[in-house]
Image 1 (cartoon, rainbow, N blue to C red):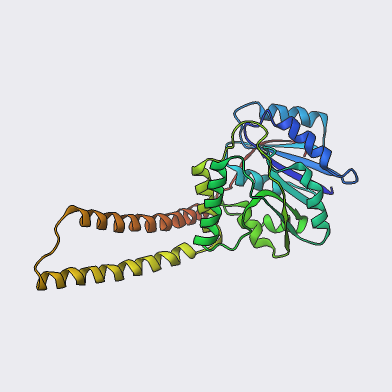
Image 2 (cartoon, helix red, strand yellow):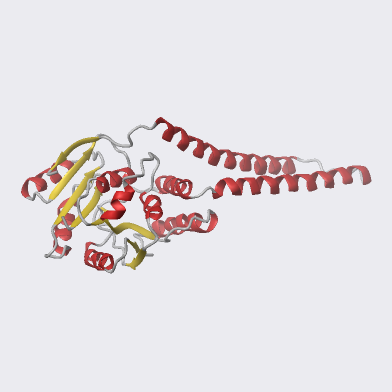
Length: 304
C-alpha cells in the first residue's frame, strides 16, 4: 500500500459521497491507496452510506466505534490501522481541501517525515476569533512550542505511524503526539475551504477542552506559572497589609466598605480556583492513565 488516507466522520451522511469522490479524484493514479473512514458513533445514517461504499470499492474501509470517543481518539484509531507508506489525515467536512493531497505527497517525497498544513482562513468571524484565541493562549500564554494555525490535515511516513502507536495515553491530542515524534517536518500553506454542509462539531467548549489537553500534553508551564502567580499574590498581599497597618497607626483612617473587600475576595478567590483547576486537570489525567484502560473499542470493521 502506497497511501493511506484517514478521515473521521460524525453525522456526515450528506458529505460522505462528495468527500470520497474528491479524495479519489485527487489521489495520483500511480499510487495504490486505501481510504479509512472512522465513524465516531454517528446518530444518522453515516455508517450505512460508508458500508455501501465499502461494498462497491474494497479500497474504502470502515471502522465504526462503539461510542462517541471524540475526534482525537477516532483519528488515532484510524492511524493505528493504516498500512500505507504515506499516511494523510484530514477532517471529514471538506474544509481540508482534497486537492492538497498531491502537494502533501510531494513534500513527503522530498524526505520530510511529517508535513503540517496551516491556514488562517476560517468559516466565519466567530470561528476565526476562537481559532486566534486558541493559538494565542497555546503558543503565547502557555509557551507551547508547536506549529501555529495548523489544521488536522497532515501527511507523515510509516515510520511516524510506528512511533505514534507507542503512545498509549487516554488523554491525547493528535497534534501533541505528532509533535513529539520528529523534528524533520515541513509546513505547507493551503486555503482552508468552507464547510460543505451543516455546522462544525467543534464548539467553544470543545475547543477549550482541546486547548487544555494540548497544553497539558506538551508542557508543565501552567504549573510553573501558578507558582509565579502565587508568589506575586503573596508579595502584593504583604504590601497591601503594610499600607493599611501604617494608615491605621498614623491617621486612624482605614477605609471601610464592601468594594475593597469584594474585590479582594474576587481576586484571590478567582486566582485560587484558576490554580486548583489546572492542578485538578493534571491529577485527573494522571488518574485516567493509572487505570490503564483501553482508550477505544471498535464495534465493526469492513474491508480490512
